[in-house]
Amino acid sequence: MRTTQLFFQTFKEAPSDADIISHQLLERGGYIKRLGRGIYSYTPLMMRVFKKMLTIVREELENAGAQEISLPFLHPAQLWKESGRWDDFTAEKLLYTLEDREGHSYCLAPTHEEVVVSLVTNWVTSYKQFPFNLYQIGNKFRDEIRPRFGLMRGKEFLMKDGYSFCRNEQEMDAQYKAMRTAYSNIFRRLGLEFVLVEAHGGKIGKGKSEEFQVIADVGEDAVMVCGEYAANVEATKSIPPSYTYENSLKSMEQVATPETKTIEELSVFLKVDPQQILKTLVFKLIYADRKEFVAIGIRGDRQINLLKVEEKFGPIETLQASEDEVKRLTGANVGFIGPLNTKLTFHADKSTEPMTNFVCASNEDDLHTINVNWERDLPKPEFDDFLLAEEGDSCPHIPDGTYKVQRGIEVGHIFNIGTKYTEKLGAHFQDENGKMKPIWMGTYGIGIGRTAAACIEQSHDERGIIWPKILAPFRIMITAASSKDPALVETAEKLYKELASYEPLMDDRNERLGFKLRDSDLIGIPFKLIVGKSFTNEGKVEIESRVGEKHLIAPEDIGSWAQKHLAL
Ligand code: ATP
Ligand code: MG
Image 1: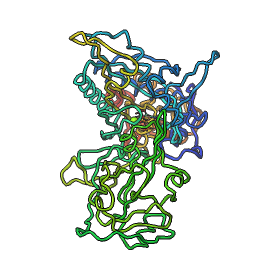
Image 2: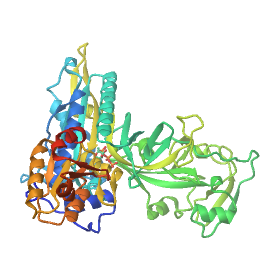
Image 3: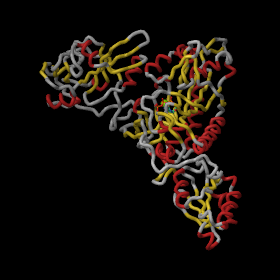
Image 4: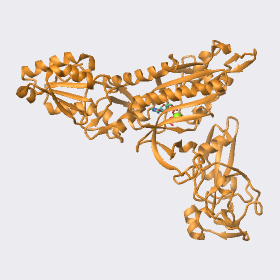
């Protein structure tokens, strides 16, 4: 390819909304162009990178036995209502919905579990047809609250999604393992340093689930790491540092605590540690047919993990109750809600179980109760795990291990979803004994654009992107130092032809050499070949790698050099 023919443009400055390096470099290098918030066009440069990534993705998936399909983006609402996710996704406002001329509702695909299940329903009817694994590469649409960071979080984005279909749990586990290996191979071949972390299935379902996280400061996820074990903070089980509570029970007392709405204010006012305070929060659980409120107690120094609340109670949506709702339900203001004589259903985090002589609010403004004790003063509630993990917590999986927190970019996600969708959508088969059973499923996704952005976050310098050879849009940039010197131009053209099979970019623009070199570095081409001064003086061409190694090579040796450095 010649630069004069390439649809391509570079920029000195990144747009003002480009907060992270990958976004800045993708825009400055002319890989993407913003159409609207979270919506981007991909240029030929971007497509060249994507095609390379997808070649690797396809190779590894096909090796693992997966087969490529293509599913529609336009989904009839009916299907999503049958699976129960129409309400889930619309509650979160994630779904783009639309109507056709006859008034039928549709959504634009945020994911494809429903549609792929409808593909296999009635076609796959016997246990003999399992297992199989289908994947596709296509756009997804999600009305994200915070689209940002360029390709990291778009409203429309490119995903590889795959689905396995099995006759039982063991077969599903085997498929999961095969995909885990395939994904590890893919990310390793892309040159990414990643960790596999235990994850939360979120809206897709329960069941074993892991994410492939690329550790990077700009990552939107908190990854809790303890030795070999890692988990997304959303899914982390942890034990908070212990606190020594008194053995002898003191008598319970009410104390006036004016203007002490927060744990910090209260702890200063009463001269107690936050660990001696039981904090109560009220949540609103929204179900298809009703709303419920639940109060949850937690140790004063800790926070509640909303996903754990969701998992325990199974609503469509979980919200923190508003100030007005809290007042209406309890008669007291936020900050003064507690478990004593409450009208609300009260649950507590396990962190509160060992508490003695604790402080809690009295369900009356400006009043707290001190020296409260389980059983003596109020019945022991159901203790569950609602704890949001923090750095320094103990890890139940590693003896004596404590968590450290790191930021991660979730590039891939694999999980076992069992029969959740197939049961709801009626995808059944006849087993070995002639009994009808729902199909077992796994679902697997890789964010293609996000993965490209993660590669850039991991590999760049002040001059631009540093692509690995296997992903670079071109493997070598070739140019004559002066377009006015026919000897240089002629040799550059000759070498361009000779290196044709190594994806060269011939920079034949009538521009200064420095300008061309800067563009090559910005877009991340691994090598630059310059036919310039050294050629005039000693008949050699200069080759410089993207990371600064220089060689002088005689044109007749270029073939063997390329074989060694440019071949994949
Ligand atoms: P996140 O937690 O980041 O919102 P998710 O868990 O909702 O992602 P999945 O449904 O598991 O995402 O989608 C599979 C993959 O698609 C993710 O691992 C991620 O790489 C990518 N992805 C998800 N949402 C986006 C988005 N808005 N923009 C770009 N890539 C995305
Ligand atoms: Mg995910």
